[in-house]
Image (tube, rainbow, N blue to C red; front, side, top):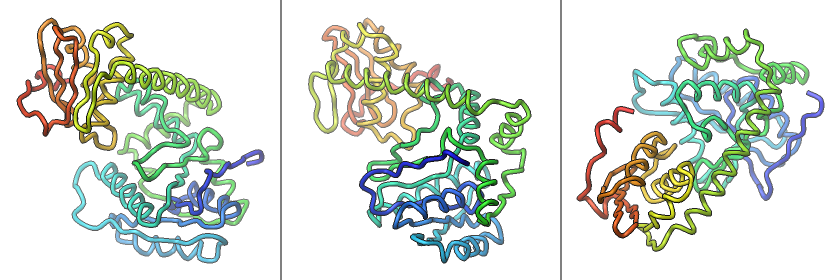
Length: 330
């Protein structure tokens, strides 16, 4: 992997790294161990296989004498779901690692996502009907929450095969995850299909960068529109100039509404579903009579006579009109 250059995040005394033991994360840890003086390599034992605890311990033994590396094992305890297990395991894994980072005042969690992962994510989101932000896919720096930022230094630079070659060239051991070969999982089927089609990583990476630039530009314009349109606000309710939102392109106005919901409501990991925000925004921006809806822990009240849109945290205003069934069916 000649020419690969990792730029470390600024002002980071300690970096955490998600260490599954696969070739991708082992290669990244090996690279970072040569660059940073304090790395906490976190392996999460999901407890989904009989040998998972032994495997986590084996990974720790492999890196026990690596410079600048401290290995930590976290365990996902409790009842495991019978369906959606991979999604639940992912959520639990990131939740455990983020909590560790917060406890140890670590602001950046390194993840070994690479060009192949980016391609798979793009096509998975495409099949789910994602908009521009979703198709822009993963970013090198992405906030997980207010305290922790995910850092993906390998995106767009290297493939899984490159990282396997790196491990072999540097005598780095790794484990093979048997679920990666299970075609019952969508991501694995996509991985095989993309490999068979010979999709150019370079071209897809260029597309990702362009989508990312467009997404960033729309986000900046939406922030500016929110600043202009907001006429009053407190900790639980914001009032927007409805006429100003109507005068702008719908894409910007719907983004402003979603930003308000994400800021004031309970949000969740991915915030309110964008298609539901679109559906409600269409009604609110075109109504001739007062309307109210609930979404994402917020109430949204449009008053066309006053030309106001009030978005408030739901527990501050319970008397609202429920979301139409047509929107629920999206």
